[in-house]
Image (cartoon, rainbow, N blue to C red; front, side, top):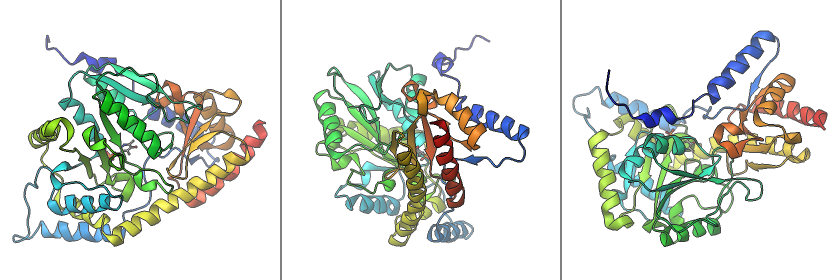
Length: 395
Ligand SMILES: *Cc1c(COP(=O)(O)O)cnc(C)c1O
């Protein structure tokens, strides 16, 4: 066949991280069938949907089977009742959005990937380590990517220092996956000022904003000037446990490029996306009701308490880490300058704990390791005991 393919796909690195982890764990368990292996590597919520969400889901599903309440294609950008609920959710942080700046979709991952399509060939700035979707979706489009190194000295929160003033697309994720690091208001202001000065666009991923407990911005639009230079992509996945249900939203202010960016994003969505299912949108609305938000908060507090226990062990053993407190992720420095994978193997075979090698999130992640708080309370307690013993024995 002479058909041409998009050869950019051939330049992507193999997506081997989670398959290699699974393979190593499987081999270890087969060789050691009596050992109880605990995973602190889960990158997905584990608590079930709240009752108020399930009730809305069931009710709306039943409506689909009745002639009078049956619904066909939903509006491409979401029903107004969901957009209105999102609008009210943002008003709590004094961010005032208009309904036509909110686009409801089936996942932040889709939105992040799809937004590349409506952008031309700009310089792409991506902090490293980070959620791999930003790098991979820009690689697929053949873009030039500049990675900004996260490290101990910047607390894994790279800033624009030293960047030339050139139109760029800047990806920021706060609280960050995998490092759990959160940008302060002052730091985001520096980014927004840089974006305005360099005529750049910030794509702000706030998937974990609901985990913030300290005084940090939940939305980029809490920063003065952001409406001129930023879009925000967020999701019900981590807020309300919708990873299996699928509902997200993107916010595209009309102040960017005199409304053109908002219009072409709408055009893109209306052409290639046919909307989120009625029961899912009713469930999303329920998640943002006062009862729904209370349930979200309870679940997130459960994870954050797990995170706190892990943090205590690291503090006690003098191990540098970022995250926890405002994030489900704890990003720790591997003791004795071990590489991410050497530490993975040692932790698996000696403490029977699975985590995620930091290098899997970018080359600046080597020497670091991600632990997550998405396991159960009981397993996290047991894992913490093992971790404490393990670190003491390493000294
Ligand atoms: C989980 C996650 C998302 C959410 O993705 P969905 O497709 O909405 O489930 C977005 N960004 C980051 C950084 C994430 O970790």
